[in-house]
Length: 184
Length: 153
Image 1 (cartoon, rainbow over the protein chains, first blue to last red):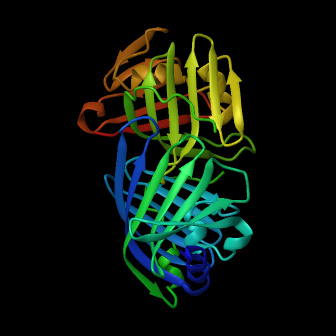
Image 2 (image 1 turned 90 degrees about the horizontal axis):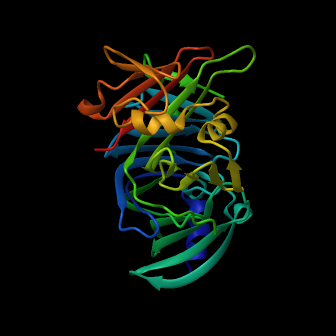
Image 3 (image 1 turned 180 degrees about the vertical axis):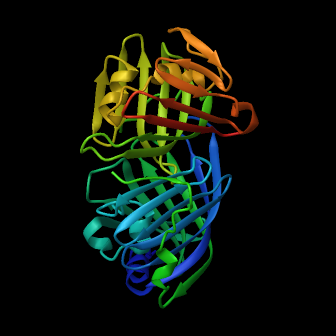
């Protein structure tokens, strides 16, 4: 128990860090799952870099102002204002600063050797219904995302390193030559 | 909970749509992973974020198309009307189902060309579909719309 406190402490104390992740998406009423792996880095406030490597490369970078999404296979770069893009995504847990303002937190029973907290977004936009965050002691281990379509995405972290800071250049996105860049 | 029926998935992959700037409207681009099942008469298209969460879910039959997003369901008379409302351009989503299989849609005339065919004012390049699952379609009439799809293996 006490995962809500572990989450508050994580948001408070983990100023920056990096880890590798495995993402497993479970579709509702079907055995279909989709597994992706990659690495991510974060630095509060609002800076993160998610690099999906398998089964294909995709990069999502926020420098705190804008969010770049790059898909090399489609040769496409999309740029959005950060605004409330953090919203109720795992990035809000990793790079946000106001977990209590954005989520209602409720401790849940221990399971699979982890302590869990249910984080329900206070804002109603988007399709994410809730996040379940799992801790091994004080160490962030899993984030489960449930959306209003019954889709469940499980992000398991490994080699999590908490750092005092990361250079801003880590969260700079260099647009590859010839990529099609569009910003609405 | 707006759980739409998620029938058999025939195609999944990634889709990027870019609409060129026109007048004072800037260029737009949208990209998402997708899951597609059924055909032009009955089917469903699901758009997903990189995190795997559903961004939008469209299901259609006969002359009714229902779109579910985070803020409640909306109905449209056709897939093209749905594309017009959400992307600002009447992209022939019904024809796209056939294009992704490397063939023209049987609902309109077409002319073959070296890389694929021309249909509904679009140049459809299907030559790389068998190589790496890439489809490139481009609407020539301004504002130029480019649609890139990459099917999962």
